[in-house]
Image (cartoon, rainbow, N blue to C red; front, side):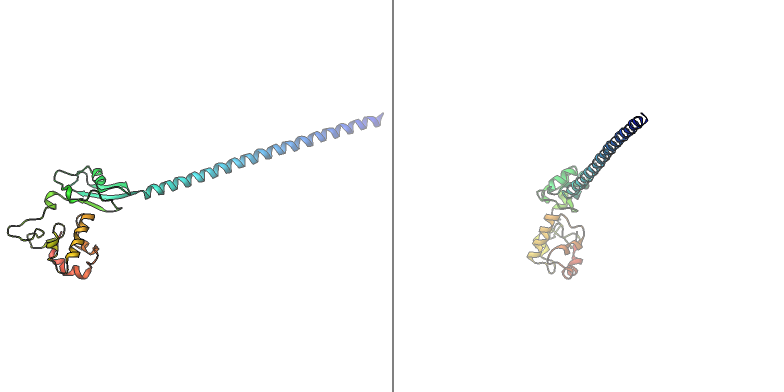
Length: 208
């Protein structure tokens, strides 16, 4: 009788132990599964965030490369620096600057030209664009001092300068058409064929 009671107790203890073991086993697996899921979610969110940041940076670089900055001045209503699309034309830059004033000379600027980053677009007045006339003066590009104005002189006037032949005179006029007025006489050295030697020969004979 006593042995039978002991066997029942032992069986009961064994059953409880097995049950607890199974319970703990499943509880541990479930916890691990939740932790793994959480980790995957965090990694997934992190990866997506990094990718989004990278895409935004790329978009920012592309946008920066698609625009240029130009300085519009002279006979315009609102002179200043303006941001334009990289393939914008001069007339669009002038529009951004409020358009030309009544005193401007539209024909003096190539408004169909594509702008370039960092350039200055100068719109001259009618008076500036017209050859300066002097009583008895034979040259429309000369001022009262007798010097040649490289911003207004024609080909013949430019060719009166030492070392400036027909080809260089044409290059000076082409430069004015493309880049606008010279802002300093030293700008002449930006033209191919006019280096320091030629410039030194004519610098006392020219003005802007």
